[in-house]
Length: 114
Length: 112
Image 1: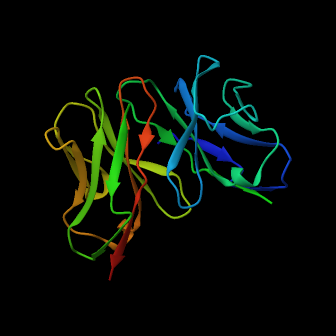
Image 2 (image 1 turned 30 degrees about the vertical axis):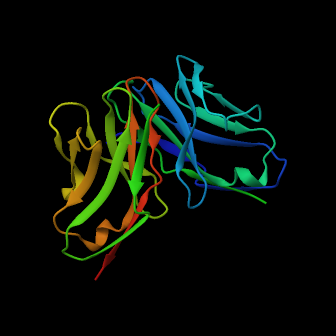
Image 3 (image 1 turned 90 degrees about the vertical axis):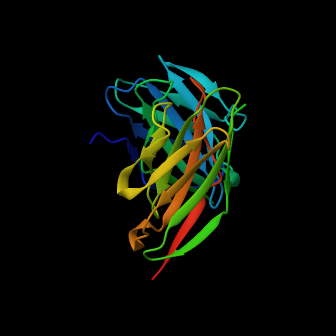
């Protein structure tokens, strides 16, 4: 069964450093998403991406965040200057369409900012 | 606006007993509803989804959920719990082209 692949599985970074979280969505999917889950809390939407541009973003997704699809397969989330509160599990997801399609999620990247 | 409320952040059941995880939704239009499961240190796996066809939806691992419009509910059930069902379960809602919105999750513990 097709999978969404995320790398790395764990990342530890110092406060103020830049991090890039990488995702390979399912190949024939057109819509891409990033969500995050702070330990013990709910899964929160960050951003959706379609046709090489952001289609929606949440209040969390401020100027320190950016997304990119640099080639035909990768989808990345960059955090420019990490803060302690950015420590969370970050999930990438993709779907073939909108409407009644569910999303296929990756296994997540656990980001720890120290 | 769309939202889901999951009643009970923690549920414990004995092995072999009925599992019932509650989810109520709020939506201005007919919603699409989903249940996802998250095993320890893993990602989110789709269990089942309601997309306005049959109101009783069967998913993987013996789980099912029933859409009840009059109660605005989409509770998840399994007749007989297994130790391997221990996980976090998330209800989620989607209106048309809007993003998927998750509930706060219910941690299911199975007592041997």
